Image 1 (tube, one colour):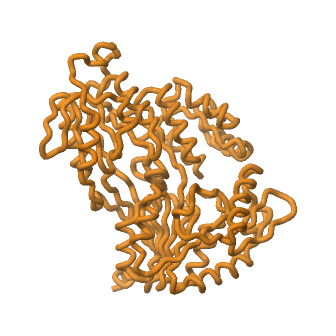
Image 2 (cartoon, helix red, strand yellow; image 1 turned 180 degrees about the vertical axis):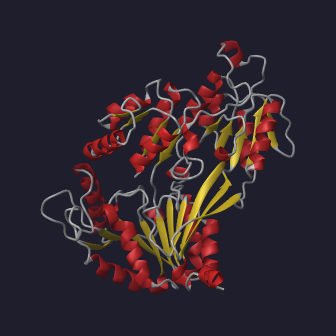
Length: 502
């Protein structure tokens, strides 16, 4: 679905597409592309390229003819692609990346254990845990911890490992021997530390890893995502739920999040606090449905926009750039010897001082879904936005755009005055963007060379991929999308049915 969805969106926007699947999946990718050709997509518009990432993938991202890239995989690979694109492509070439994460679920003492356990098993172990949305760490309230963990261990015994072609199979193999070795090493380390609560046996042949349940104190014990059938479980006290959510947020990932509770106020409390692209209440947290659940994360988990969301196809189109953004590359004009340089330390000071409180949703859209389930897509401000002009008038326009989307602007450009909107007079050296902290996006309408330098500096940053926004009228680029899916049957039923019948 990810592979074909990316292809379809790029084609729908009028692009020619080079499709490069993961090196382990050439056969199914070849079949998918062949079906698209048979359906009428011209072969000169859609081409399949087979090979590994370090050679073929790197060569594609370094080719100056590439106008944009869409990628699903590890954060490290996405960052490498970002750096290569910044060097080779035009500065406005889009990168849409979805990069997984340390997806969490919280189960409080009011949750129905039987339903919770079924959803936990599906979220953690379906597809052998090889979904970017898969559950990685489970928090269970201390009051019910022993009961839920006991039920989980018993339910795991009912899982069947085997050939995925067999309809009776619950869990298939992992993708390759390298993945198997890494997952098994992680489990072995936990076992040596006496933290292994349960692991299933595996068939004698094949790249199988037995689903494992590991005890941890919390998400801080996890250094990276283990992409396989491994679930970490921690207990928490009733008074600690806010601290648990804060710890999850502090990791910086934000793809999927699950919550099991029958208290509506608890749902609102947690949903308003957690930062994740797709939030699921009283159901499993995998298998986003087209048309109901646009999918994608934020922070370390992705760039947006959401696949299947209202802004997705548009991201594959050429943006109408801001005034002056098509300027020439004359070195004298680019360096701007007559423009005083902004004090980088002062810029950092302004960034440190601006407040960026959690914003209320800008827009809320109810999406269709089955009876007994609600689906809602909300957009939120992206956060702190650096507005770099290149002049004071342009920076003021950019700040107005940012404020209109609920963001907090900081202006840095020649002629800027520090006032109601934080500002620093002077031209910011684009290379400083690699070191500055405390901002979530950059708005800039400089020359091609200036924007390329800014893009390259942003690509050198660790952590989340920070966008360089160059559109004349930026709107969607200044927003984050979050989707909330609630199983209403778990807390008393679907009240809307009563309203409809009356």
